[in-house]
Length: 198
Image (cartoon, rainbow, N blue to C red; front, top):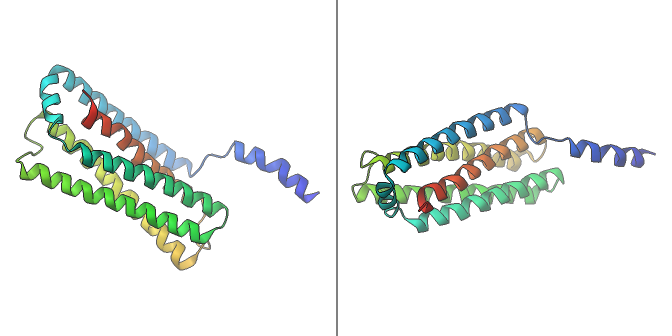
């Protein structure tokens, strides 16, 4: 009787389940709205002087951009794997996946540092032209989100190492993962917008 009641309730719970706190979704939606406005402003200014934006885009390092895209996609997959392992109570998989996700995020940050350094060495700064003003502002704000996300993931990883599952709730894990997926999604839009748009 107990098994039957569990199987009849779980599908309904899973169907209506929204991962994380409602507050994190409000934050994510607000953030996405602000970035959407930034993207629209970028496209509007770009349409006024296409040649400047095209020439400036060619000065970006496409290899760095592609590698960062791969790293963030991998980190999102690893975070999702960690959350799934958390639900199955597989501590080892949960910790290792979270740790690897953090390493991917740190790799993104390191590459972005080299990319910025390369630009500054060539004399390219936020005041070089309109395109690079957008480039540094948009990627800079995204980088700040990345650092916040890394701090949160690092906190979770340390708690998992020290206390196992005892001190972490599924809600905290899911809320953190939701924020990290937003960081990934923002880059998925930024990459083609800045590096690929003809």
